[in-house]
Length: 263
Ligand SMILES: Cc1cc2nc3c(=O)[nH]c(=O)nc-3n(C[C@H](O)[C@H](O)[C@H](O)COP(=O)(O)OP(=O)(O)OC[C@H]3O[C@@H](n4cnc5c(N)ncnc54)[C@H](O)[C@@H]3O)c2cc1C
Image (cartoon, rainbow, N blue to C red; front, side, top):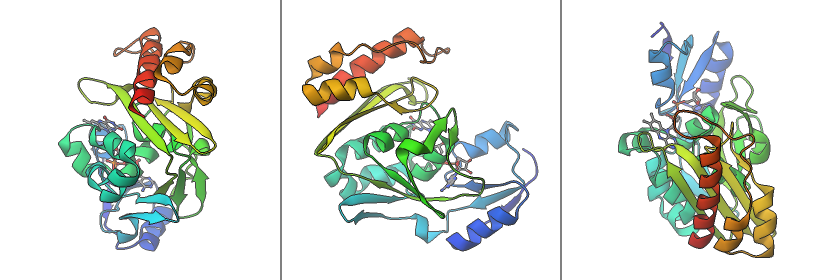
């Protein structure tokens, strides 16, 4: 690990102020990704700005019919929240299947989406649930938030404060997990909103994206057989030591079929 200065700001303004005055500061949430990355010397922030004491980043509330989840909510808190299990059980289920108990008790939703791992689960939920990412500066539609491999629309020093989710009539998430990490080899989130179906896929490509071909087909006929009948192209999907592009294309098809059945 390289040397760094540790800070524990008491509130949002102080956190943002430290970030803007530091040479190359990083926010620290659960540390599940950032700390190992620093240990491997793949990151060497000048300052670590621990968000653990910032109360404004906590809490899960109903905000005019949408669910607002504070950025520092852990995966375990999302999975156990009465509001999330009652209004958006698909999201609670997604959170409950992230990693292992240690990761779920430390890792946060804000850290997960800021990190934008191509195999992370939440990005698919954000896209299918028409979410908005709230930062200290603005609201960013999920469709504009994930911009590439481990990259987002966040500016340097911009802090995610919460995520606001629409609540659809029906939703389900299915993933084929990597047997070691539980990250998604392919994960499909299906949501039926009043104005149509959204289908978003994570784990298979460079970053999570919606799949319009599934959406059009399911808007015409919302059945597992319809989902299974949609052709998934291999082009653009990842091949790595875990799975080939062809296998991932097959998994998308199977997960989409299962998600529709689960709806
Ligand atoms: C063994 C293991 C298994 C895992 N399995 C899964 C899995 O199955 N599915 C899955 O989706 N994920 C998985 N993860 C990822 C994990 O769930 C965490 O969400 C992820 O590591 C980052 O969250 P964190 O809160 O720990 O963020 P940190 O590691 O603290 O931070 C990550 C990055 O986000 C930035 N950041 C943090 N919070 C904010 C904020 N509020 N605003 C702006 N930037 C911020 C940090 O500066 C840093 O760059 C796994 C991780 C591990 C170690």
